[in-house]
Length: 140
Image (cartoon, rainbow, N blue to C red; front, side, top):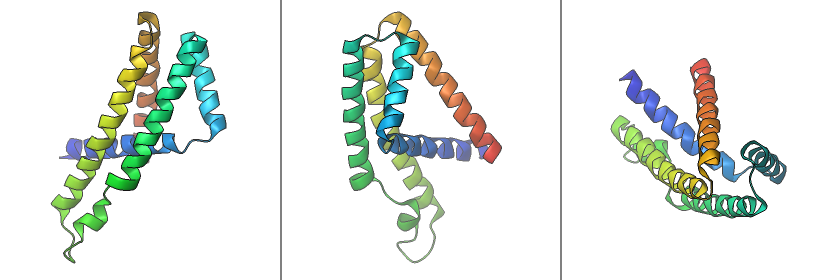
């Protein structure tokens, strides 16, 4: 049960992270792109493609958050009482939709990279999620 809850929390955090990505300042986006450019040795064409992919992702994630995201607490209390199952199901549904969007754009990013860049990118992302997971463990 604890693993299931941890999984739901992790999924919710991923959606939150994705939404936070949408709201990054331009300077953070620039720094992130510069870091990737240097670490992956990206070409100017790849940088332009990456910018376009991130722009599309931001637009789609913003659309999801503004139109399709459901507040778990609101959904779970519509009948005047708190419904635990509705709450959990809403969190999972939001996480699923958000992770589907994120996965689509990860695939698009991987498609513009060569094999060496893909391997480095995967390693960078694994390390990022490990750090995020460690931070989450410390918080809980």
